[in-house]
Image 1 (tube, rainbow, N blue to C red):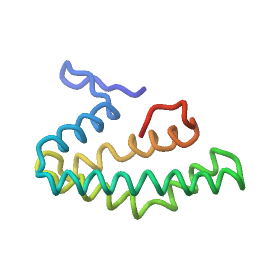
Image 2 (image 1 turned 60 degrees about the vertical axis):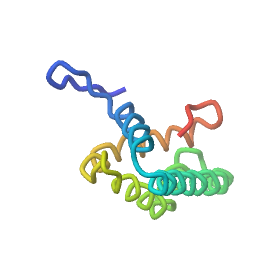
Image 3 (image 1 turned 90 degrees about the horizontal axis):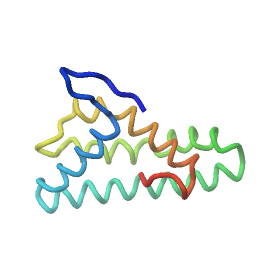
Length: 117
């Protein structure tokens, strides 16, 4: 896990992303939080369906890479909805996007035993 010392505080990108989503979901309006949750669900569904298909055709690592590319539009819709929150801006989302994609890749390759996305 990547950590950076940041003026005495340890910064963990994945933990920051999870905390940001949780905080944003708690404080945004019901409709906005619903949109973020809906876009996240659509992205996860795309990842799950596409990976199942691709993994039957090729190795898991390559299938994960293809899946992330295939589901890019849904990922962007999810991140755009997340960035529309009053607590998380576009810079925050851009900063944690690489960690989110790595976690999604790990989730796909790890299967049901891995941490949920």
